[in-house]
Image (cartoon, rainbow, N blue to C red; front, top):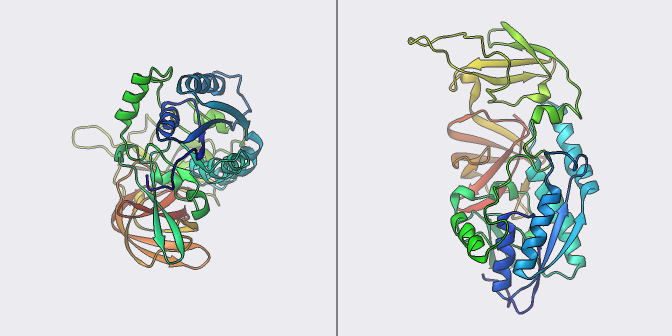
Length: 372
């Protein structure tokens, strides 16, 4: 692994009850580490409802710890989560943007609150079940850490980890970075782990599978306004700009409005294309390739660079959303932790509030929050 000798080095593993973190704990134990499991509870508001799986996740994590043979502790970070992640989540939605709470959760909870707690337990490292890799490089200034994409490109999660700093990465192990998800499942079955067939969690961590608009409506007021076409024709009313995101095509309430039709009599789908906070107007357009949905430039702020400083201006790859192929672009760093990207090809539904993440091949350089 390129680390210092693993002779009884202590690793505290974030065990969520899922198969990835479970196999991570087993792999680390096989590699000679002293492994301690830590179950994080980050959300409490409605953990007695059908949508909250915290109790089942804890039972799964405890069952796995028994099979793997590691001690398991539970820690409650719900207050930190609400202050550092959820409050920002609501502020962003209130401002008409679409935030990525998983990015903030990694930076503020899993690799800050969790890391601090693990260090208080005498940990040399922390580990999680993320699909990513860390590479240590000797330099005149000392050992530096790089964040790399996972070997399994279909599961790579470096996008969500791009705000990690040198001090965090220096203490972090990603046991699954070198193996594929199919191998993780195989190991879990062979070990007889009770969660070997458990489905991967989807959606935002504290929302789970519940209807998103219903959840958000508990915390943000509805503020209806006009739903307009690009030429200003009103098609209906929206429930509040916070409840929609650019590129959205479902839940618009205009399914019966056909608009422009093709030669065969069918009609292109409608997509959310713009939000106007000043007039509280939501604009929709027809067709996936409408000009309003396409852009070749973006501005981003609140930049965070893994090396501790901005990359040199030049050509890189970038993702403006998770599960997107790297798009070739030119980076221009700007003042006040900002940067601009100019893409070779049009990008679809670039969304303020989401993350623009830069890559140099397999190396994740960091990124920032899309402003426009």
